[in-house]
Length: 228
Length: 245
Image (cartoon, rainbow over all chains, first blue to last red; front, side, top):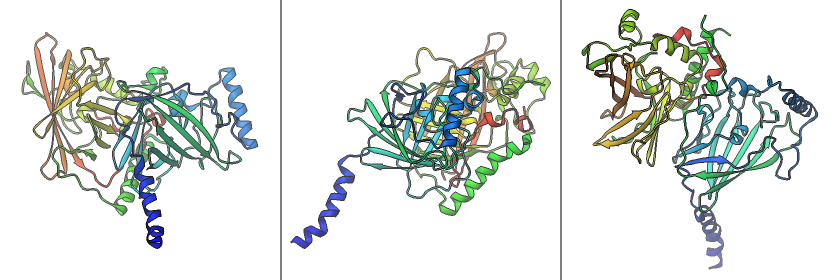
């Protein structure tokens, strides 16, 4: 009997852990960041552990922004805010949730991330602004791991830099009533940060909200091409 | 980097992804005629599908839209009162989302079905069309390039009504003075390998008379593909070589 219990208990527990909290349904409505920080801080409220060269670049970005020089910020030319910066924008986003994929659709210039939920990891084909993402459910938490980013984007509006080795893990946990959602971020980039660090964000759900068509070049009045 | 090279990059990326995905698994379409989920590519090159005026003055003639190597000459477009030629080019060069309802490019398009919604997600300039199945058309719609769409099923056909297009009208409606709405009837072929749609544009001509034009667009199943991040703003102005209108 003891042997049987010892054999079955881990199995029972693992099944229980996996099924105790079913994956929530994220379809419908939109999510909006609650008091998104302009400058991302660690969960302890500290400045992220920038390596010296990265700290210099960050200070330069802060100084440039104070002077109104936004040349360093590619979003001024309507290139995508990278990850996690796009999550801290005032525009909402929505989830399209299917078993094989979770698609995150941001209002910001209609940007989209496709998160592969199948066990097979799609080989990254080259750096992109929002990276290549794979995800899975851990009970009621959607876990997304992303790699393969371009190095020209920033982690936040203030100007936290990163390189191509950036790796971001997002853990989205909706509240039981579905009205809000906590996001725990784990960020690592050995070329820019002394060690991996965590940050957190919060979102509220607008069940009746819809994503509207956003055209960045019109919103920012950017003219990319002039007629000859 | 030359415009042609920039243009080729996303295409090359698509092929790389396709090859990568093919090595792993080639997805097959669902046998359910109401299940459109998957990645498709429009059959045909750049430029919208050819439209035909089916009601109003000039019925039976090509409307102000044409595909590569076909359609009316520029003078006919001007005679039809269409100004979409230059505005389409200007918009595309400036990364303005074109009205995807007429299917204007051969890039991959993913259809995603979720409760109460069907979403058309275009790789080209990440143009998104949201079709709501769980609500009526709102009384007031904020105009947008792709309009506001609601749909319902008629048998195995998805019927979509779209209103609220912005001044840059879909190519099939370019000859109209005003566009009231577009109705799409979208179906899947029996083998699931093709999605076909008939788009009907209803509006009024320059004299205020009712006018209706129609175009057909077909999409081929691309189970070996995956959408890739396409950032138009990185290569803005580089789409001149592929402009066919």
